[in-house]
Length: 266
Image (cartoon, rainbow, N blue to C red):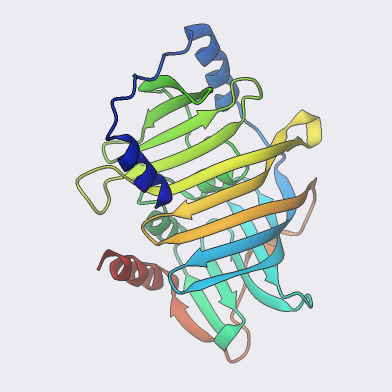
């Protein structure tokens, strides 16, 4: 939301147009983005801060990511007791929250991610974005400019969306990502924004972001992740499926997200 306010303020002034980078430079960076690869299975340990309407807090946690579509995130209390966890195997996505023992069931992972991403990217794309890669395949930019020293590429995403990324021209790493959608309005509006910082090398010199600021403007969610470590790992595939604990109250995850979107639109 703050980025939208800032852009509205700057629009009051007649700023010069953004320059266009030399074709050879943009082609080299685009080639790196197109071939962005991370190890197939990663474990990350992080500190997380969450802000939303009427809720904020911070804690620590860990994730395991197995490309293309497996993800497990565990959050714990300062005493290392379970606080919440979420898991997807690409088919289902389910979550459990210790408070009130609530289990959020998402039988269709694609439907859940469609609500989160304005229908613009699937779970495979979301996991790529989490590790600093483009969430689309075979990218062909419709516009290329220079913004604050970074290369900015705009990619169309069908008729109802667009992807805008800013890239460090030296490291070829993402510094900013924005997914735009017309899912709820006639105008392209941001449904996901990510700022990346503090990249460090892992296997084969691959650079992974250690700091991510993630925003879902339509849901009014802000999530800040600061990774303490990234490691390549091997884990059993059954950790990406979870079932309700005894006595848990079940809720439909798609319905919860839909209600959140409707409430924020009021």
